[in-house]
Length: 155
Image (cartoon, rainbow, N blue to C red; front, side, top):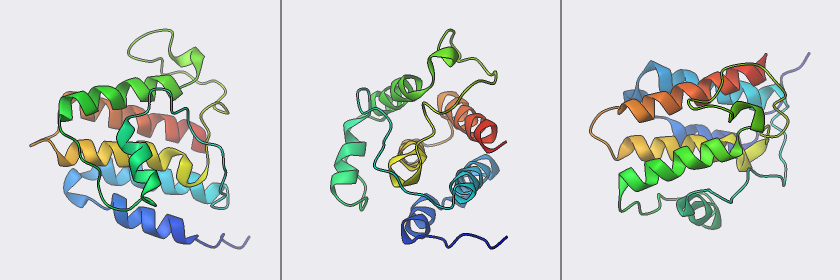
């Protein structure tokens, strides 16, 4: 079977997410995200994850055609907002306990394709990491959880 044509938004996103200094777990997460998009033929959608708990910086970034980096005055507040949003966009069956359950179930609720999907989650993780001196446990935990979810969805 012929490989799908990589869309321009994917190429741009890969450049935005490039951060080898974040280590192998970050590189693996970006690869898992790309695999997920590739498996769907780099489909696009007007659907997006819920913005109810989404950090305001994501909306500002999208409004600016996904260019630049929005201002983040307080990294701890931003990190908390990212974690709350991540919990909000996960399926209800995962949110029964904290940390969220690592079990299989239907992922359709959060399987948002294209640039309105997981790209927004990954860019939040990148902005968060860029503003801390070293990996925090909270950042590593969230990176691992996002990676785990994408691995489950890629099965």
